[in-house]
Image: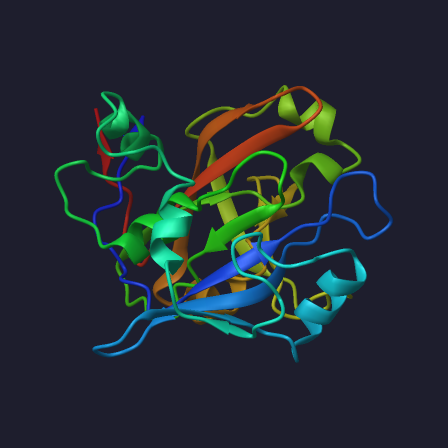
Length: 245
């Protein structure tokens, strides 16, 4: 199975997300601490969201800013895209096209720096940072490759991991009574068994498409380590799956 992203949603903005380290009392909730956007005929901006509840919670959990952009300034306007692109493999690498395919991106389709960062996430092991495409400008049909949030914290995660298969159908369902997030979207298997959740920073935008035209999901890959398994689901908003052989 090889699903590919066929409809690129150009992001109007990206979120800079941060997670506290493993083993802390603050948990691993992904917090939105800044937004990145490009001004019309102007530079790309990084703006810390210092008045937001997410930022305040991250700060209490030990967030001290992105290393290249200190908290002494709320707004930064120099070297934003260049800095985050360094978190991705350079395009001159021989395996760069393979890197794009891992993220289900067609190497022959040009991408803006914002789109590339949004779809690839620019996440490195250890520092807790990632970039999140909110898909708030998306119009069906479009596709997303999504890491399942919260899987490894499920009480039955180890048992469930052994039964999962690439290509397995995944169903999305709103969970408005979630005590932590009224916009939470569950990912479930055919028996309504909880697999995990949609990225909480993308869930608000995806809510509008859950019922009509609908969102289809398939397990795309299973990797990581036994202690930190990673499950990725390929989502298609408003269209039946097209799978390349």
